[in-house]
Image: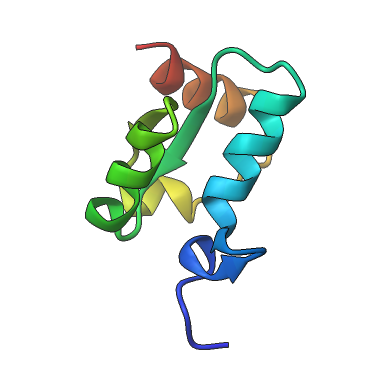
Length: 80
């Protein structure tokens, strides 16, 4: 699978779009998508679905998320 997985087709739409729609159907009101790698390709799709993209540097995305402080730091980025 050499394709970029968030944009791979699943049921006639990109995987990421399908996931956002499933969350909406389940009643989730605020959806944040943390994007680092290949952001320019994902942002238009995220915005079309009414979700919010949260840009994060690649080095943060690939960092180990081992402690509660790591997750609090990520949550702080989302709340901005």
